[in-house]
Length: 252
Ligand SMILES: NC(=O)c1ccc[n+]([C@@H]2O[C@H](COP(=O)([O-])OP(=O)(O)OC[C@H]3O[C@@H](n4cnc5c(N)ncnc54)[C@H](O)[C@@H]3O)[C@@H](O)[C@H]2O)c1
Image 1: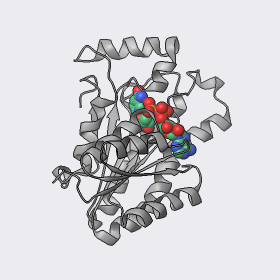
Image 2: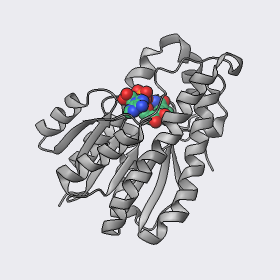
Image 3: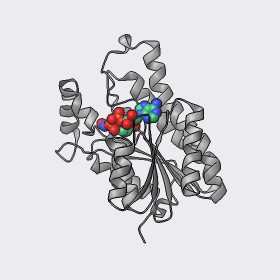
Image 4: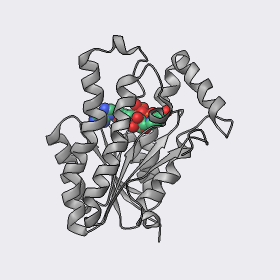
């Protein structure tokens, strides 16, 4: 049997970018996957189905509690339960690099709302379903920017620092229900939207390459294995952790 046969997963922000790779990877391991995004997830769903996997697409907005609750309800309605939640949706790829003095309140609030409050809304809706089965895997997507102190993205880096803190505290609260809560911290990864940033991320790409043990750029495929591990029984006694996947740049 495939490693995740019989499991049901939600991947937020799965319509494109790195999230689409997580969704396809989970489906390839046998999970039934709800691909959720503010964008249309149909192309990713079709791609999974063409490969013989099971998936549904859900248009959902992580800033709206009712939309997030509907996402979980639709997943359970389609597949009967929920085992795995990948909190991947975020404001990142299209975020303009700028000094902190040029970030206005609305932009700051939007980044925190999607990147921090979004995962909490998802957790609040998902945990009751996981408790019903006495099993769950929550995988949050943090970032190595937290450890590097990357400039010109103060709202984003702050939000991902919060995701790490959220991971630890939540792990303490839901361990008694056999729900694992872990995070991964990706290094700068060549998703579609990062590549589209062109010269504005040139310095960051050079900085990452210099600091890495493996002297090549990071691609979305580099992250999928760790998410599958955290979604699988192989990590059932592991919680509250953040795994850095960045070609050996941050070491702790
Ligand atoms: N690419 C990198 O270098 C890198 C590095 C570290 C961490 N990350 C994290 O990995 C994840 C994916 O990165 P990416 O490069 O694919 O980013 P991306 O910006 O291309 O993708 C984010 C996805 O989230 C969705 N989204 C945004 N707001 C939403 C909302 N309100 N409701 C629902 N969905 C929403 C977007 O539509 C998009 O599909 C993000 O959490 C990002 O912060 C990326």
